[in-house]
Length: 383
Image 1 (cartoon, rainbow, N blue to C red):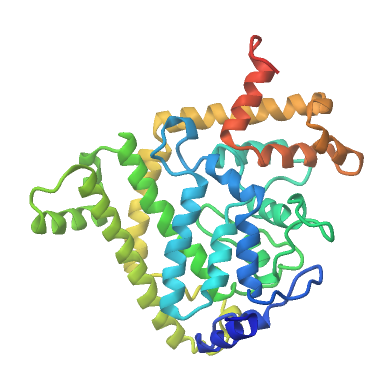
Image 2: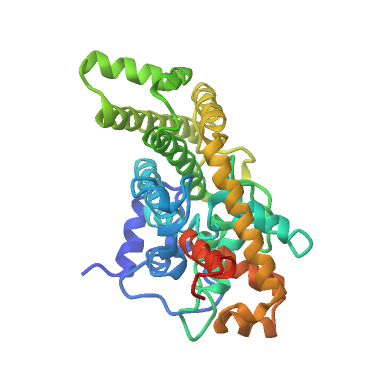
């Protein structure tokens, strides 16, 4: 039988710059090690069984949950990020267990209704500490999850908590938080999850945009990466069309970008002489990245998505509605906190009411937030 010590011994076969579980900086609250799981495997399991993780099923990625069953949610996005990140980590001989835990945790702090929900809470909390979904994710795993009698939160390892707070993409700008305010770059496993997140949402938002009909096939001629893949696909399968054509192009786009990450990262590791974990941390620029040519191609795709999907009038309408939902709920709870459920009301005795209400709304799913809104503001809805 494989025990924890055996797992830790197998990790010695990983690259010298991989984060080994036996060198973890540990947990905030001391716990005995598990007999047959490494600390990062244990973190992954704790995240999967958390309430916040389950709620990702009904939180918006781009399209609100009730618009259809085929669109991605925060949960399906998280699983796709995990698949991409683990593939990259495996090829680079990094710690796959740590990468999987980081991937599964990276969106735990997101509000209902995507970025419009976050914008609303940030504005409402402007004078009370603001709102940042990375910081909220850390609050979830350090404080808000209630699973263990010995300590609050999930008591995750330092490395997973650092990955949550330092998660960085064009949509995620981390803020320094004690004890993670040190300068330099994150460890390579964190960098892998960051770029896997970018690859996942770029390509899968493109996929969902086409499925929704908001992106038309003729519009995609503005995306050079799409045009190249479509031409190659038609040369091989002249009669391919519809859903299969879309799937094969998206698949090819993801494969090309992952391959680029692997090749460029391998070159960077050699260029910067990365021989141990701290070497990557000491270098201010990212090691896990793509070539400048690929970065330019990806930027063209993002600009297309911004102009044609994220700023599409229907998406903007839904975002604006969501902003009003969140604002109305927040002000309603603020006016009469007695409307909060009893378990949340208990926190009002020791915590600031603004933060308590913010935590409560941030933890809602889209569906629950809509139901609450109906109960408060539609006169014939049962409360």
